[in-house]
Structure formats: structure tokens, C-alpha cells
Image 1 (tube, helix red, strand yellow):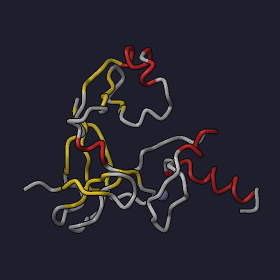
Image 2: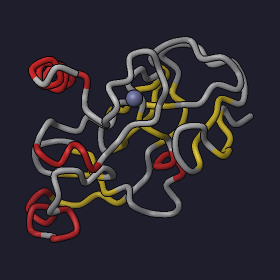
Image 3: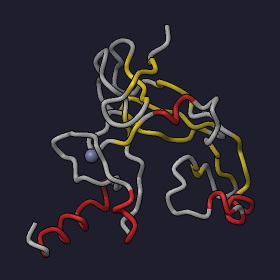
Length: 153
Ligand SMILES: [Zn+2]
């Protein structure tokens, strides 16, 4: 049985949802794409954007470009309180459950965007209690909070 299904998302467009209860640590779906050398991805204007969200670094020499229709995992939305994480195993990239997930929950992971001036172009609609309003990686969210404090928000 497939662990996920595609459904209209509460966060953005279509998303993936748990099709059954999923235990923490379980592999849910492969993040499929094409392996390209970092030399190539660095030169390609397609990736000439800090927020090339479908590009994953695999090792010192290779990236994985997941910007293809056959890569169902690319439908997974960002959340400030995610239940999945994505990491590589050899030359493959997998989406894992980082906590126990109940049937019907939307799958999400931290897109890992860094904090820079264009963060405002990427609002987050995850609606979790921890939501900071923008798609920012966990390690960068304090910068936004500090900025808001300074501006009296
Ligand atoms: Zn959020």
C-alpha cells in the first residue's frame, strides 16, 4: 500500500497526505530526479537562485534536480512544524517521517531557505503554532523574530 496520496492542500496547491498511520523513521517516498554534477548546476541559470527548492545537494560532486513531473515528492509543502525530513542515502534522496504521523495528516518538511532580503517573496501558510509567516529554515527563524521585535511587531 502506498503511504501517501495526493490531495488538495490546506497549505498550498496540491500536497501529499498520509494514507495510513506512519511510524517515525519510516521511508515514505523517494525524492526522484536527475543527478547532475555540481559544476553543471552552478553554471545553469535555472538554478541561479538561492531558492532553487527542487535542488538537493547529494555530496561534494553531485546534486539532484527534482524539478520534474514524475517527482511526486516535490508536491510536499513546507511547514514551520514539519513531520518529515529529507535526506540522501548514496545517490538517492528519501523523505522520512521525523515523527509518528497519523492517517490523513498532511506531509511537510522544512524547505531550508536561508534568511535574506527576498524572504518576503515566500510567505508560509502552514498555520502551525510555530509558523513565522515566511518559508525559512528553522535555524534562520530567530533572525526574523529579532527583526520583528526591533520593528515593534
Ligand atoms: Zn509556517
